Length: 77
Image (cartoon, helix red, strand yellow):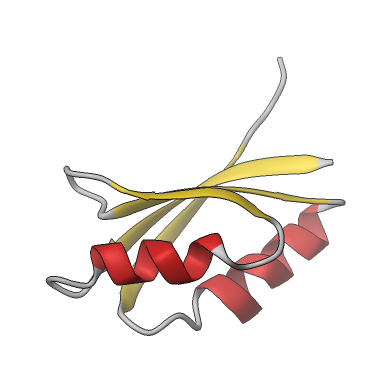
């Protein structure tokens, strides 16, 4: 299982709606609107890196109101 944090920037005033919509996507464990340089932080999981990439590109980035994403896979050192 691969876990990642996805940092999201949204259009002005869209953070709460984006977080709510993303929270319903399969593979997303949490989606919260936050303050700072990013508007929404998502924790997601997938069986492998390829499926994680598909989740981000095909599902999350298609949510209306998102302007940029940054995916940070969790590593265990």
